[in-house]
Length: 280
Ligand code: DHB
Ligand code: FE
Image 1 (cartoon, rainbow, N blue to C red):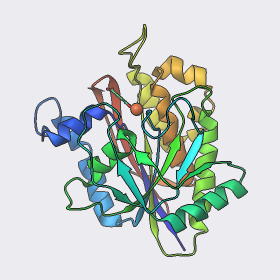
Image 2: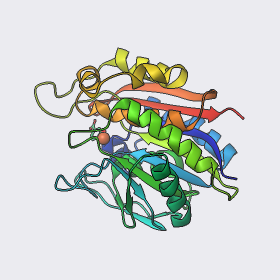
Image 3: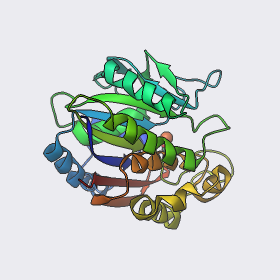
């Protein structure tokens, strides 16, 4: 049967992508930030997942404001990357696993998550920046990937609690797949940031650290927030942090912390990374 090995949540700031392209990892601005990812990379090399399910938000690349699904699942054997305007270098395409995706789709719909299935899906920086943070040192991507895009761009957007429940349903879906696959769950976005309007540049370190603690030990705390309240505390784009609850929901009750790291600011954002191993 398929098995969840653990999960990783991380910010997906486009500037990180450009820093990797320009090989700025050891420069004073970036060193501490990138050092925070080394234990996560080591853990991934040890557990050797076969598939990564990447819960993220599309930023207007694959879905524009004319049509915005609340939850969209990639059901393809390949996903191409493109840049929606940050000047990011296009990354190598990702292999998918359509058969696995359709199983996840069936199970989620059975569990009353009425997702949109996508047999073509372009993936943006919300997906690619985290993948590159983990695996850019390798000649090719070492995992297949399944994108799961959550709308945090066009209101109304799903509530925090919905993402925790989605993660739990995703966990059941994965663990009912008959093939022996090791699966890692990514949740990308956040932490606090606001890119426009009167509060542009807004960051709340205390809230970010509370969110990290909650995702580890008490996901109910963050799940209880309304969308308005998360936006008040974390900024309009900081609401992306709900992705972290989907990862946590998939892992079940008991987790072990592999890495917890926070660095502020990167670009306009509180940058966090968390890696959790699922208890056996
Ligand atoms: C930034 C952060 C994001 O999550 C994003 O999608 C775009 C930009 C930033 O801080 O620059
Ligand atoms: Fe974003």
